[in-house]
Image (cartoon, rainbow, N blue to C red; front, side, top):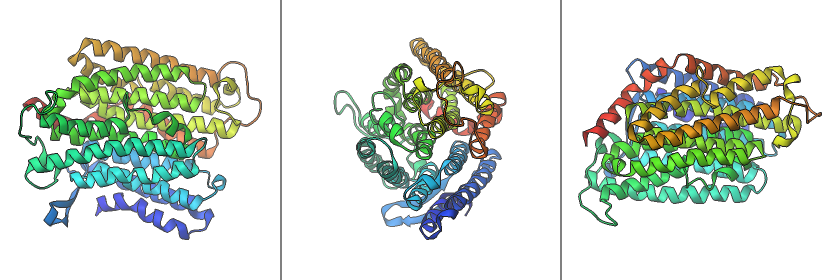
Length: 485
């Protein structure tokens, strides 16, 4: 029952939204996401105590389909992050500034159910359904409420994601046929696909893994499957891009961790060198593109690309350190990228610009924002003692275990991260004032969004042991499975 509440409470609230007066929309949204966060902490506590919650209902037994949900250490941590990011996105929503607030809030809440469903699913078809359901509200939110060429951006998101989903569906059917019936993830772990070389030296396991890899590479995204990212992130309203970058992007590396690697370890071992090389290129490529941007929102979008490639590099290293670092960095990235997009949105709303050339000297007018932004910026560039450092260090260890060349490229990305992050912070907060109008200091609402995220960034950086212990069992099981082949 706890998992069902966690899964469906935001959807129930979304269905009730159209009947509410506008003045109650944000209150109901905050209540739904706040309760969801509390329930997610209960689930998290169960996983931390070695008693993960699960349920298994018959869905369509004749077709081998069951409604299987489970929350181990990795999924429960991401569920808590999903609830937190959702709460912050609702808090960041300015209902009075939205033309169709009922639709906006209902769609925003429904994203929470779709994301949670993908994180909880233990059935391949159920995972696919929720994974696809994530796209629907975001397509509408961007196409209807976005800025700039929003319809084109939404269409880009649809085309890229649909292409990956088709490839994943074909891989699911292939695995199902090889598994002898049933879609349970646990039952299909390490499924053996019969057959030698089929196409260009690729085995059936390679081809099936490639289908999953394409879907998850697009969702993450990693280079060169990132063509949708900058336009979509730039067009999306601030609360939408907070969830999109903070949580939806995690479904890519989570898909590798939960689905592709354990189901097809042979294909994973064959493809990991290529995928790691693409991720390493993406780290530097995204960083260089971030350095070129004048639009601060677009800069943060490419910053996110670089960091998501870092996460993928760790998970695809197939090493204990790399996978642990990649999973931990999913949490860290969710916290940091959510806060950075919110800060950029705050600049635009209060100062009327997000052009870096028009920002400067804000520290004298916004000391609280300056302090919080500094902590988050230092965490983003990987300063020791803050959350970004721990995950990056473990990922670098994992990369080194596979190739010293990958380590050098990834390390170059760390150096570039310091460059573009400090450039963004110093350009906005230090130097002569360039934007005289508007009050840049954060108020109660902005503090309610940024301060909890900054506290988490410090807490994980100072004492990461509980977070690593939480994910240790799931990571260890995956490493043993990969080593068994």
